[in-house]
Structure formats: structure tokens, C-alpha cells
Length: 387
Image (cartoon, rainbow, N blue to C red; front, side, top):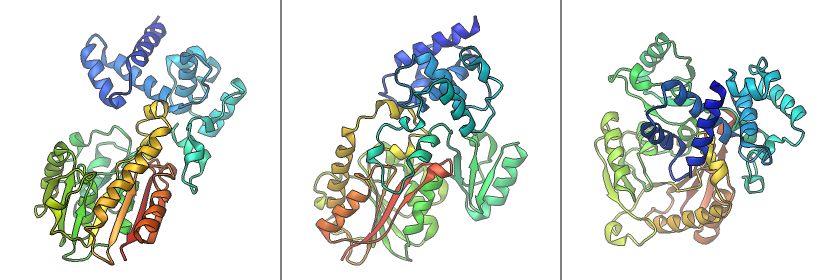
């Protein structure tokens, strides 16, 4: 039977996955190795695995295939063989609103509690609504792009003509279905950046001024720097990262965006960099700190199953060490922009409190950006001023 084939494929994938790679990369490698799987097999296997991980820690005592059926029912608007086989009474109700589907599952599985999905509720930043945050894991996040105003109308029209459902959130920010193949739709002459909505909102606290000298010290592929540049093109900019490969990706993104005037350095911010930076002083520093990534787990739900609580304190210590090593290069009266894509208070508010206590920084603004309300990542951003 076809359903037996699908279940065997799912169970083999689940057994093979060890979280050493992000799930999407693992699937690419797995399908490349197992070329006997056709396009339909790959599509269903991917859907089932993502649905399964979206259930997090809920229903821990149930067999994996039963957890899969529950997860696939809750996470999707179209039925599947797994739903038809293991939840046959629900196959015609798969398009109900999420709350209605949860009620059905609770009637069938009295032990089900959607708050069990996220296994670290006591560690959440205080302003996060635990129930809404847990429910957000059952909904696939959107794909967000940022388009310069000069290109926005052309981009919007092109996307609509291609039959893509677009939400224009403002004149430069569009939300699209996840998995949209933008490179196949938008022509090369339309400039755009793929950037999560919450990541875009961190720019609200940058406030750069003309001819300021800014340092994006954990720049990765340069998303925050490009946002800074869009806010004020007449800035000087230093970008750094510990990974040379990230800076190579950054160079290509900067080239496409027309950002040509900048410096870059490969720096390990856990060591003393005075030899490299002794003569530098900055009007602003963006510290998009390495973190648990817990605010992005709606995109990488496998992390719900594999993340261990002791890692929270590891990241908190890492963030404090990096912050201590970059603050000395900040001019007095100028801002440190502290950002994480974490929902854990130990990485967010507690790091800010430590910076205030240990280094006398003055907190000007602080916000948990609640992307779980908008099919986006959840992030934290704070603007601290050096006295």
C-alpha cells in the first residue's frame, strides 16, 4: 500500500536525522544520496518530517506515527494519507481553523496540551505570550522581502502576475508564501533583500546619522548592515565576522545592493583585538549576537527536539564576553545596538541588565519583537548608550 511506503520513508528519515545539519540541508543531502525517491516521495517525506518536529514535546508517550498524524493534521490545510489512515474522522475537517482542530485533538487525546510544544516555558522573556508562542509553531512562517521604494511597485506587480499571493505590509516590505522561488520570478534588475520582518524592525532603533562610523561586529551575511545603509547611505562602515565564508557571502550581497564603500575584517571577538582595532572608535556598534536562535525555531522546528536547556547559559556567557570586548571601541554618548533572535530572558533582558550594571551603559530602548504574531521570527533588540 502507498501509505505503508510513506510511513517507511518517514521512519527511515527520522532514524537517520541526528541534528548535525539543519533539517533542510539534511534533506537535500539525503535525497541526493537516495535517488530512487521520486519528486512526490520527497515532497511528502519533507512535509511529514517538518510536521512531526513542529509538534515539539507534545504527546511524548504516543508512537511516532500517531504523533505524526496529529502534527500533520494540525499543521496543514490539506489532508494526507497519514491523516486519512490514522485520523480518518478528521480528514474532512483539515481546513478548520487551528483552534477548532486543537479542540478535536484534545477530545481524542486528553493528554494533549499545545503548551507542551515548547519545552522551556520558564525561560521565556516576560512579555512573550506562552500560549500564542506555542501555537505559532504549528504555522509555517512567511517569506519576507525588503525592496527599495524605487523597485517596489515593479516587484509587487511582477509577483502578482506570476500568481503569487503577496501581502504588502508597507511600501517596501512584502510577505510571501514560504518556499516561493524568487529567483525564478523577479528579474535581476529588481533589487531586493530576503529579510525576516522582525529583523527589518530592528532597524527602528539604529538611528544612524550622516558620516557616522558604524561597526557591524557579528555581520554574518550582512543583513543588518544593508538595513543600516538603506537608512543612511552616507555612513562609514566596518563589518567583521569570525567566519571568512560569511564575509564572502556578504561581499556578494553588498555588490548586488550597490554598497561599495566599507571595510571588512575576520575577527574573533572572544579575544583581544587591540592589535587590529587599536585606532578605531565608532559612532555606533551593531552586535547581532550569536544566540540559541530560539526565536527562529518556527523555521527550524527540529531544534525543539534537540536543543538542551543548559545551552541557554552557554549563549548568555558568550554574549556577555563579546559585548565586553566591543564596548571599548564605542565613543561616549553613542549607541550599542544589542540584538538576538532568541526568546530566552537569559540572552535578552538579563544581558542588558548586566551591561548596565557592569559597564554603566544607559538603556534607551528595549523590545521583544513578537514575530509569532505575524508569521515571522521573534527577536530582541535594545539600544544602549555609553556614558
